[in-house]
Length: 397
Ligand SMILES: Cc1ncc(COP(=O)(O)O)c(C=O)c1O
Image 1 (cartoon, protein in one colour):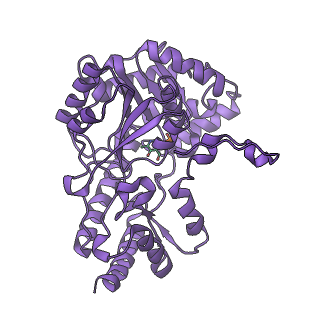
Image 2 (cartoon, rainbow, N blue to C red):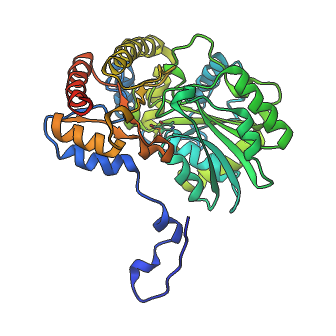
């Protein structure tokens, strides 16, 4: 990234070099065009189409009625932290002390920011796999850190190669940032690979950040988390939240769990920059964790039906498509259509009013792909795939 400091009388020259240098999110830029296209079917936005379960909404309403509208403890409500600790232990087999090892955050977004701030010094390198969530590179760059990006390919099922992590490590490597199941590919990381990465992290003394925000939408039965590998609890920052599992994107609620020495530092940054996560959302999330498992399962079952449908439709149309192991995205190749992903997406929007995200928004290795979120009704999906088929038939004649 090129940083330049210009000294003039122009107030615009006062913005920070790093703030000016990071590019705007490729998704947002695209959506400005989508929002101005009426009657468009959107497979673009990465959020559940389901409304937050009513029991959760109602608890939030009661929290407002009862005046639970004040700051909470910086760490978040203890009852919520206790439930989160139980949830993480159930999902990963790893116990965390709710008093000292968990912080409730404003989504995984803020959790990731404060987690990275707790470990990255200027010039430190963070290894990540591409295509990846749009914020990862910027999160590291904003700290004057250096993202070290390892591409993955459809031909390999977007699999992660642990040997490449080892090759990418330098004396400046601070962390590896993993996301499984992954946005935008829906691919996950198998147990042997996580175990190999864990061994490398221990041998080379690096931290692993595990963004498991899609853990509730994992279609494999053998879920495995890197914090559960022997010795990894001490060097893993575990991130998860309510946005995807409980359809609570707008409530802005997530959490960070880790060993006390890291959480102590993360908490200081959280105290000074956020105070606490929204209180109303915290009360509502307590209900979600106590009684919401049925809602989570119901949504997951619906996503699975949609995944099976959309993958088979893309393959019928002739666009190669990985069968994702989780999340609610597919990331098919549009190379057979003979267009760049950006031209494909813009053309599709114009010709058929279907919005998808060009793969480059998730890094250069996403070129030649589009991301389609199947977080929309079967009816919408069926119609969208009909239109995509018509568009592709025209291109692939
Ligand atoms: C991989 C990944 N991490 C983090 C986030 C941010 O989630 P939150 O709403 O919890 O901030 C997203 C949102 O799409 C995501 O896909």
